[in-house]
Amino acid sequence: MQGLIFITGLSGSGKSTLSYALIERLYKNLGIKAILLDGDSLRECVGNTDYSKEGRERMSMYYMKTAQMLVNQGFIVVLASISMFENTRQFGRHNIPNYLEIYLEVSKEILASRDSKGLYKNNEANIAGINQNIELPTSSDIVLKDKFDRENVLKIILAKIKKFK
Image (spheres, rainbow, N blue to C red):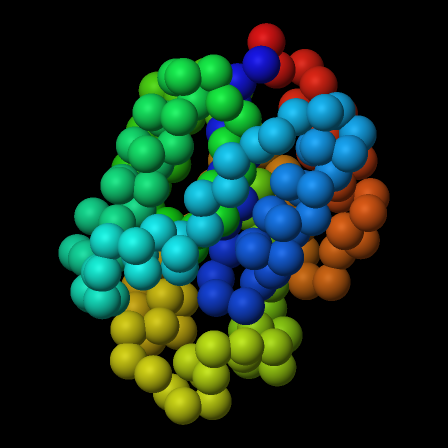
């Protein structure tokens, strides 16, 4: 079984939280040891601090191609990243088998209230979706709004993954 579960949304939307819960549930319920690629961790690994639109776009494609490489080796990969670029999503959709896109559409009020990195409070420059333009997903397989029921969502995602070939 192989495939990519791409979880995207703005900073503070819950991408990492959902991803870690999904990784745990994949192992517990299906015996699948999936690979988690977290955008922040990948960025740290390669020492990239370029948060410009161009820098974000390069990293977004790097994440997707890294996921593609692992999926092509037979892994289930969970990618948690802002990656708000249509060309990145289209690349995944057209080049990665069993591509499942999940968009966490969380209001700016909730994002600002969570603000685990202090980005919104400190009015940081280059915040995707706040003071930096983004391309919102338009054809995600699953769209989750604001305060979604994580347990129910995990069941839905697992049911979709069971259909992967």
